[in-house]
Every structure is written in C-alpha cells, then in structure tokens.
Image (cartoon, rainbow, N blue to C red; front, side, top):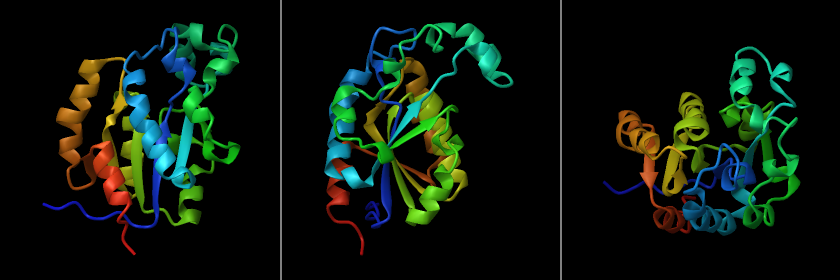
Amino acid sequence: METEAFSKNTLHLVIDMQRLFAEGTVWYTPAIADILPNVLMLSTARPKETLFARFVVPQNAAAATGRWKTYYNRWSAVTLDTLDPAMLDLMAPLAAIADGSAVIDKATYSIFGSPGFAERLKTLGIDTLIFSGVETDVCVYASVLDAVDAGYRVILATDALTSSDQAAHDAVMTHLVPRLSEQVETLSTQAILNLWQHEAV
C-alpha cells in the first residue's frame, strides 16, 4: 500500500540526542553515533519544522518528585551534583542548527510532559509527528504513545532511532509498534525525505 503524503503541518521531533547519551556517562548509548547522520539529514532538510527534546535531570535525588526520587537514587551519577551540566547539551552537529526556541526541555520520558508542549502543537496546527532519537524503548516510545493518544499521525524514522539496549529497541520495533499499525508508521530516513519533498497541499 502506498504511503500517504505528509501534510504541510508535519513536525520532526528529535528525542534526547544529547552529550549525556553520546559520551562516557552511565547512560552512554554507543549506537547514537550510527544514527546521528540520519537525524542530522532529517533536521537539516526541514530545520524550521524540527524541534529538539532534551532530557533534563534534577540537582539530586532529593530534589526529584515521587518515584523519581527512587530512580535518581539509582542514577545519582547523572544528577547535577555529579554531572557536568554541559552534558545535557545537544550533540554538537545538532546544537549548531538548533536555536533556543527549537529546544524543548523535559523532566519526564515523554516530550508531552514538558509544560506547554501539547498546546504549542495545537497552536501550530500540527497533525503529523516524525520521531527520531534515543532511546527507542524509553523516551521515544513514551512520547509516541502520548502522540497516538492525542490523535497525531506518527512516523518512526527506523534508521534514526536507537537504544543502549539493542534487544529492547528490537522488541519495540518488532513487537510493540506493529500492534499500533493503524496509528504508527515506520519509514526509512530516505523515504521520509522523499515524502516530505512531495507534501500534500
């Protein structure tokens, strides 16, 4: 079946392509280097239609709320008492093209947990979301589920997504995403770029 053309109200969401995951931290995701060229291609193709999520961390576990305290007790090495704040920055090639208004900070897995984000999409009239970034089985998937619940057309850039846990990445792409086949589409970076060049009127 031929893939439906993208509408003019399509937005590319880059999830957590940060130094935090690209360099030598406890959250290091080696395969992030492999997907960076594709994330960059999507981002530079439509820079005005691209937003960049950053996962931000608390000062320490005590500063977190609810069960996030337990989470950051385990991951104290990535709280700001220990972590260089510069590690929260986007990877250099993406930081070079992302102006301040294009960066969305979130303290939750889902980008929809960022205050005002859902309202921003409504104001822009967005109806289609393309996802790239890390980690497929955590922040990306949480964001995707919220996007599905909100009724957006969701596109996953299959070669622009990865995780520190390859088995978990594969499980999402092979088993979980197909269960939402009416609401989530999977396309390669090149297929997305081709469709974006012929967007619907």
